[in-house]
Image (cartoon, rainbow, N blue to C red; front, top):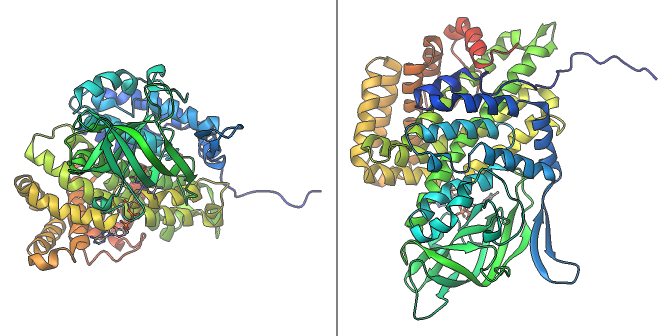
Length: 550
Ligand SMILES: Cc1cc2nc3c(=O)[nH]c(=O)nc-3n(C[C@H](O)[C@H](O)[C@H](O)COP(=O)(O)OP(=O)(O)OC[C@H]3O[C@@H](n4cnc5c(N)ncnc54)[C@H](O)[C@@H]3O)c2cc1C
C-alpha cells in the first residue's frame, strides 16, 4: 500500500569532523597552548563524527545497566552489567587519554588539550564521562600519597580499558569513583555519618587501613576499582581509598542496594550502597577529609563546565543542520528571519561558552600564578553555575528548532535535553557554587584583584563591557549581609563580563558586538532569539562561522 511520499524530513547528521567543523574550538585550542594536540583532536573529531558512534551512544543509553546483587547460589556479587557499547565508549575515552592526560604529560596547555578532547566526546555520549572524570580528578588526590600512588600509577595511566571485575593487581587498568553524598545531606558533607575505625586500634592515621561502616546515597559507577570516600574518625571527617576487592582476593563488603532510575545520564550506573567494616586506606590527614576531597571536586567541576559546553555545541549544530534542511511556509527554516535570529543568538552563546571553558581549563596548568589561581578557584564554580544553567534553556531551545521531531527519542535532541540538568546538580548545585564563589573571592583576594584589573583593561575598549564591569563592581560593593542573597546575581555578572571580554578579544567583531549588546543590558531576563535589530546583517556570518558545513 502506498499512502504517501516522504519529503521534507532531515537526514541524520553524521560523518563529519567534530573538531575541524568547530572554528571557535580550533582557535581556542591554539590560543590556550594546546596546538601540539591538534593532530590527535583531529583524529578524535573524525572518529566521533561517524554514524557508528551515535549508534553506540544510543545503544548504551537504551540498554541501561542492570544490577545483579547475588549469584545463582545466593552469594553476594554486587555486579553491574553493561551493554558492550558502554565498554567500547570507555575504551575510546581511555585511548584518548581523557582519564589522565595532564597528569601523564604535564605542561603548558595539557589541561586545555584534555578539555578539548573531553568536549568532543561529551557531544556524543555523556554517561561514560562520569567514571572518566572521577578517575581524572582522583589522581591529584592520590598523588599526595606517594606509596599508594606508586602502586596505582601504571594502572591509572594505562590507555587500555580493562572491564574485568578482578582485584586491582590482576588488572591492566583501573577506574576510581567518589562517595560523599549520604541521605541526610549532599551539599553539607559535614553531616556525613559513616564511621571509620582503625583496622589495628594501635596503628591509625594517614596511609593506614580502616574499617568503614555506613552508607552512601549517590555512588556513581560502583564497578570502579576503588572509590574515594568520606567517613568519620574520632578526629572528624577523613578521606579513604576504598577498593572493590581486598588484598586477599575477596570482595570488599560495599553492598550495592539498588541503581538509581535517572532522568538522564542513563548509560552510567549510579547506585546506593551500604557497607559494614569495608576496608579503606586513609588518604590525606586524619580529620581533613573535606579539604582533601575538595581538590578532587575542583576538577570534577571543571568537567561539568566542559560537559555542558559540549551539550550546547552539539545541540546547536543539530539545530542549525535541521534548520538548513527543513522547510516551512515555502522557505528553509534557516532562511526565516526569526529562526535565523534564534540560531544566531544560540551560536553566540555557544561560542562564548567554548571560549570560557577552554580559557578556564588552561588556568589549571599554572596553579601557582595568582591570576591563574583566581581563574581556577573563582571562575570554576562561577562557570559551573552559569554554563550548566544555560545548558538547560539552551538544549530546550535547540530541541524546539526540531519541532515535534525534537521531542521524541528516535532523534538526538531528547537525550541532550535530559542530559543537561545533572551537571547543574552534582558536584555542587547552583546555590552552593555561588556561595563557593563568594568564599573563593575573599580567599584569593590578590588573584581576584588581578582578575578585576584584567576586566577593567578590556572594558576600557568597549562601552557595553564597561557597563557590565560597573554593574559587577556595584554588586561587589554590596553590604556584607546582602552578599549571600545576591550571590547568583553577582556570579551571573562576573561570568557575563568574562565572556564579553573573551568575545571582544577573540571572536569576529560582529559576533563580539552582538554578544555584548545582547548580554550587557537589563537583568538578563531574556529568551534566545531576542538579538537587537542592528545585528540582522551579521547573523548570516555568525551562523556560517558556527557551522561551516553545508
Ligand atoms: C545522577 C547523580 C549522580 C551522583 N553521583 C554521585 C557520586 O558518585 N558521588 C557522590 O558523592 N555524590 C553523587 N551525587 C550527589 C550529588 O553530588 C548531590 O545530589 C548534590 O551534591 C546535592 O546534594 P543533595 O542531593 O543532598 O541536595 P541538598 O544538599 O539537600 O541541596 C538541595 C538544594 O539546596 C541548595 N542548598 C544547599 N545548601 C544551601 C545553602 N546554604 N544556601 C542555599 N541553597 C542551598 C542546593 O544548591 C540544592 O539546590 C550524584 C547526584 C546525581 C543526581
